[in-house]
Length: 329
Image (cartoon, rainbow, N blue to C red; front, side, top):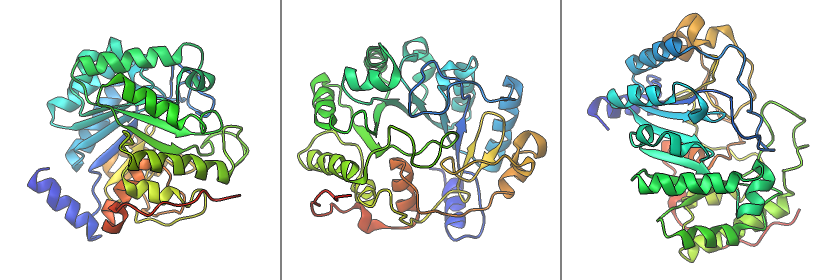
């Protein structure tokens, strides 16, 4: 981190000046898979052109953005993915990419430029394919192995839902058997942002089932298995899905950009596009200025939880908590 970036971070933490140090950019909502718990399969109307993408990224870079997370849909399905990664890397940006892993082998040269490639893995082949389609596990596995062979840093992600909550041990055993030095982040499945009534989706678990799965994840972490969650997120998940307030960096140093140029302070909130926050209509500076930083009690993305705990100086959250009993519904 440069001195300038550190000073911007300190100013934002003191609530003196907001700066978009971190941009989470949903490059496209197009995806080559149709995972049951995901609502992003087809392009969003009015997705930015390649020229607009570079214009917007230039504006954010000028505002101080130094960390970019490329998301989707499937960001590797975007035709300009390689060029975008190269552009960001040439300007010294730190790049993370979220992927289903199936297209990794087509983009190895570009992915060598990223700091971290995050690949979703729902479980052993049966559980993974149940959610993502036949053959999805094998395509992801090949992508994981190809990335590691190319020297690319990889972190696995698993969303715990009805399809895989009993597969935690099998998944961790499988990852350990690969001997690739991989860690895996776990987090509970949430309701869709864009479809269906809150709590009605079939992949959601009863609270007691979530608690038992998370208890098993904690036990495996204590035993030395490659659970990548810090204790802070695992401690926080014990209260899922009850409202649990956290310090929140959203809108202070972070923003989420959707494929059509709409900017939000957080990517996990219900979305209502507003022309005052559209980067094409008003520019990145004005769109970020129009954001209202506000927290909520429903932050369940593992890395977001841990980042917010760090933002708020919650050092106690880093400590390993005592074992807990699974909570009954």
